[in-house]
Length: 174
Image 1 (spheres, helix red, strand yellow):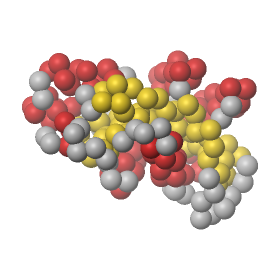
Image 2: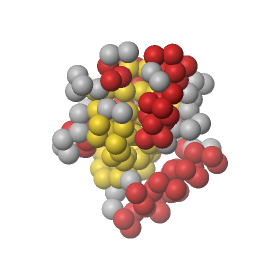
Image 3: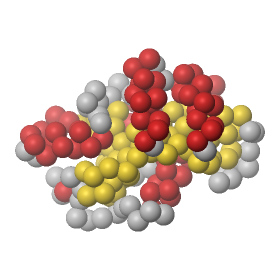
């Protein structure tokens, strides 16, 4: 995909390119998130953002069953510090949504920690509903919330993002 800047390309990486992705992830994530990014690497699809052919961002995608049915999950999203604020994260999320929609998936989710203001702002601007776990626990039973957390593998996170093109998703009605 070429965006309006023409020098930004986002593409799915091949198996043999995963070493490039790991080196990029080391620059983006802290030790904890790098560990889990690496752990999911062989079970996920990776989108790579390149700016003027230089790797600058990644999205790690999986398809999971959630309380809203088959769900496209952005497990990890990151951009190297020197390339932030240029719309690369936004382009990665939009390309992730296209990837999922091309597979018939109409519910997209991600999660983060409440201190990650940049992520919260980004997903909000892109039309995602921002749900705090404390809110979910008040409006859903414990088992449903736990199943949601497990489907996103969001055990350390307290913010859930959801964008649903399917009105049957329970998270649309709370």
